[in-house]
Amino acid sequence: MNRKTLVLPAVIGLLAPVLAACGGSDGGSSDGNAIVVGTTDRFTASKDAPAPFDPAYAYDAGSWNVLRQTVQTLMAMPRSGSGEPVPEAAESCIFSDTGSERYACKLRKDLKFADGTPVTATDVKYSIDRVRKIESDSGSYSLLSTIDTIETQGTRDVIFHLNTPDATFPYKLATPTAGIVNPDDYPKDSLRDGFEVDGSGPYSLKAEVKDNVVVKTVFTKNPHYKGELKPKNDKVELRSFADADAMGKALDKGDVDLMTRTLSPEQIKSYGDNPPKNVNLVEMPGMEIRYLGFNTAAPTVRDKAVRQAMAQVVDRGEIVAGVYGTTAQPLYSLVPVGITGHQNSFSNKYGDPDVAKATSILRRANITTPVKLTLHYTTDHYGAATKKEFEILKKQLDASGLFKVSIKGEPWDVFRPAELKGKYDVYGLGWFPDFPDADNFLAPFLDKGNFLNSPYSDSDIRGRLIPAERREADRLTASESIEQIQDIVADDVPVLPLWQGKQYVAARDDVTGVEWALSASSVLQLWELGRGVSG
Image 1 (tube, helix red, strand yellow):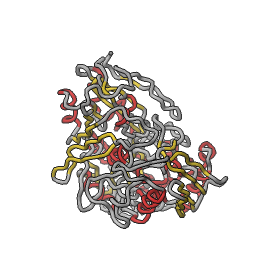
Image 2 (cartoon, helix red, strand yellow; image 1 turned 180 degrees about the vertical axis):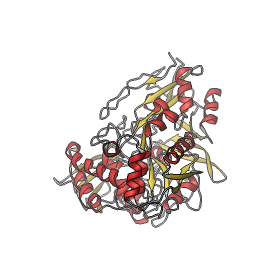
Image 3 (tube, helix red, strand yellow; image 1 turned 135 degrees about the horizontal axis):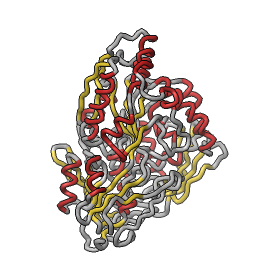
Image 4 (tube, helix red, strand yellow; image 1 turned 45 degrees about the horizontal axis):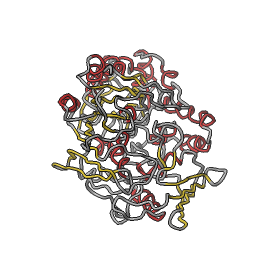
């Protein structure tokens, strides 16, 4: 097999990879050995983040990818990561009214947790009500904000009564936030500290921890699992590495069979141009976005003219070319290219980078220049390239003469709690969608109880436009409201979109199912991996 980059062609809405890996995609592990997967995701328990794997708290791609292997949801996204959700723990789910306000699900027969305890409708209600009651500061509970009450009938029927029409509700039931947990293991009013996870998903979990940091997570096939997934292995180890270089060395030595997020841009180029023996690089469609967020209550950026001037100066093309190359593209909206309703609102408003226009914006608002700012970023959550990205941002803003910028990096376990507490005026974050719909690139940033804990609030967005787009089962019809939201964001700049990325996985060529290892929605699908014969 040619070990050059293997590109999976796809059309958003029909995101189906076509590559057939060496050895066939349906073969199980030939020798019973665990498949070892490397990641740079770091899972840390701390005072500010005591429960990284609790569905009531977890709200980042890494933790969710752990939960998706272990905690079952009523619905799940298809294998490709796009399209309509399908029943998972549920046998069936359907809107039972014409107004998208009553959603009825029936559980599969004889559904059990990994310890053999039956899963009932009462457990589903307990799990979801628990998330809503705890209201963790991570903001994950906001995904369930359209629920009014949950009704159970017998042991298998669950009925959700919504407080407003929500055509996206089936997607939300496919997220780990709506995961089904055993009430015996998860307190009703508080988070479950540490790294234990108990659910009814395809695997059970055992975490190896050192100094409150997960070193290795072992997923063992759950013999009681019943659902749509068909695991092609008996055991997978997820090993966390400090950085992409360390992860790459482990792959080259054969200590790791596959490595996923986050490969560095340099690794992607190297593996594509001159890969090690028996290693393939697979490119996949992705919906990851990166952006600057603003604490709009902070004195330095309270006036939207400051944020607008930054939007007028930032050169996304230089960032992409200088750091990410062909692995990313400039982004001019929170809604990425390929998602129904996307429009280039920031490009439409600001055009090309222009210092003269930015100067005019600040002058009209009587803003004294240079504006002193500190840009904060996380040193370990998105890979080492983040630092270089922020160095370019600093250079661009300083070169305008309108800003005097310093940058500061912190590890994720420090960075994220500080951002949620409003300690940063300007900060960099990424977003991997909860589900592939424009609503999920807008509401988590702009609605009440949002992911950023942002003080920004627009009454038209919250009171009219988000409810309007959620009423439309036809997402093309919803686009009118979605486009209006994007235009308001471009004018107010509570966030500043920067770029949209692709996804890459590097794997040894005796691993099968690699083309399905990450869905278009960035879901890590460990159950797809098997071991075949080297190509």
